[in-house]
Length: 562
Image 1 (cartoon, rainbow, N blue to C red):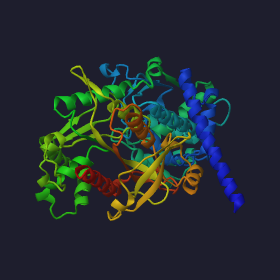
Image 2 (image 1 turned 180 degrees about the vertical axis):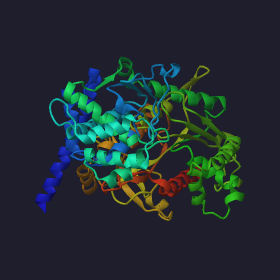
Image 3 (image 1 turned 30 degrees about the horizontal axis):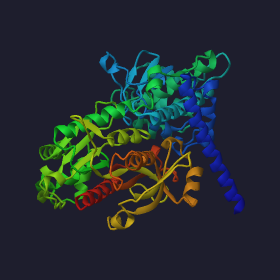
Image 4 (image 1 turned 90 degrees about the vertical axis):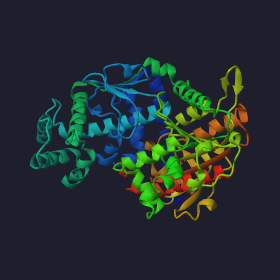
């Protein structure tokens, strides 16, 4: 038994060292300004990723191709990136005013621009976490591409197998294939990828889009084609970082613009000096929790409230959602669409304009000056959480005087990976540990297991790890955290960054009250310790509705009863 434990710990240490090497390397490459992922300069990243074998990337270390991981990655990178030899990471440098059409990945809100046949530009406005995320995904993508080239090149002259010739022929048709043509192409592609016909048939529709129904074939072909070019002609793919991005990174440029815009709106509406409660969440749960009861009462009176919330989250029910949104805008909600580049939209709720007799909440405060202003900010991404909250909590000059925000509470709700339990369960942290450092952030959480135990959802309480990137987690590290005295129940990407901003504002700068109340709660989007339950296995779907609204309701109840 002890020998097994020693082995597991050693593997966890190796994995931890691999993550540390990756981040040191990525910072070095960023400072250098460019590198070639499949060349000597990218060797450390490749080796570390293959040693780490993150759960999200599945079979990256095997000869066969990884399909779930590939789908996860291409959904977070710009459409067509597999065709590009040159990938340029830039700051917001004015491309929105050009003829280039923005390409926005379906699962990551970021502007990307196809400059020409060979080059893709990706705008970085969320800080280092976004760079790490992209570089990790690209490393995975290029490693997978070379698996393809190894299976199709027969000799040093670049002669390819028959399967490759058939795949190329199918892709170059440039049209929607018949069922017969598609199944023939899938047969050849399955041989190239080392996968079964059945596996590719099941994966095929997940990759397909309306504009590109044969997208899986297209991705496999272009990944293989550029890998062959690298192998035979030494035409290496290159990633560059623009000089402006390297100069601006870390200076909170986008966060400062974002925060000042919001404070200006608060001032114009006479809300700047009212008690403020900050909630980091999505753009629907607070609004729906307050306004659904009265807005949809006649239509859905017989339904369970969670069924109504699930219906509102369905993209087919746009009219239903618009009705609630309209009611909110007419009764104290202000919506601020982000234009700063942070991609963090905002809702502001003036409780003085809400008729609480028509809601499911009770609020007894009668003095307007003491009535809460609820400020909801959309999810941040990694280190961006510190940048945005740090800037927002700073005082602002109004007509020659310094105004400190009267921040009463800060509530953070988000998705996280769980280490014990399953999708849809709730985690209540008592501290955040920042992965890769000795930093830890204990706090008094206003939420606890007891106040949520009768909600019909399993609740876990303990420590959370704020990870450097969800795509780098592997079982050995997570098992160590779970089974050690750290008592870790889950992992996420923003908690330590938020708490760092809160502690700096409250205890160091004196920008906000030192007794500010904090609330953290997460609902499980995946369990990286369970095969088939990682982020690459798909989203939460309807199972995320109940925990989202259970947490939201409890946060609002505490705000209104404080």
